[in-house]
Amino acid sequence: MTKLLTLAAMIALPTVAAVAQAPAASTYVMKAGAGDQYEIQSSRLLLTSTKNAKLRSFASMMVTDHTKSTADVKAAAMRAGLHPAPPKLDATGTKNVAALRAATGTARDRLYVEQQKSAHQRALTLHQTYAQSGTAAPLKTVAASIAPVVQTHITELSTM
Image (cartoon, rainbow, N blue to C red; front, side, top):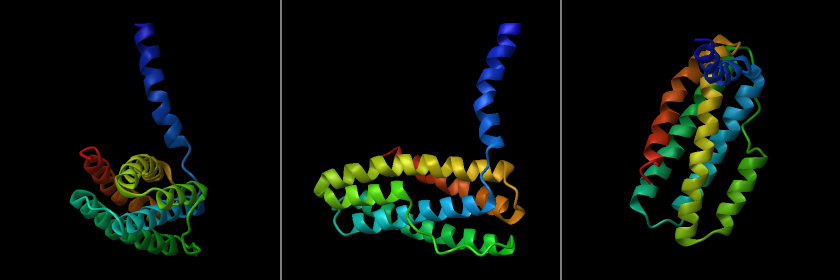
């Protein structure tokens, strides 16, 4: 029985640790904006070159959905008393967009999908964690509304 309880505690520990480590409200806003900027910029870049209809549809959805989430986070930040700077790419986003620019053809398509999978996992963790244990109520609400959209993107990516 002790081994079973220990195992259950070990399995639950990563979830508890993630919940306990929600970023500060301003950090959440900055990270959410950086993630959205990557999604928008990388998807616009892909739209200039891909011949794959399914990827074109996905990339268009990324531009629409992440433009909306940027606006939603900004509005929630304002309600929370924050005045966020316009979102910008972080170091990872900058590196990933540069790699996409360097790739061409189907290699760019494959790299885009690979990057999207990683970026969406990071985004899902960010939004879920803030929704569960963030400190600013308007941002918690918006994070909770964005997480299912990100999960939908992950599901879509699993078919590519």
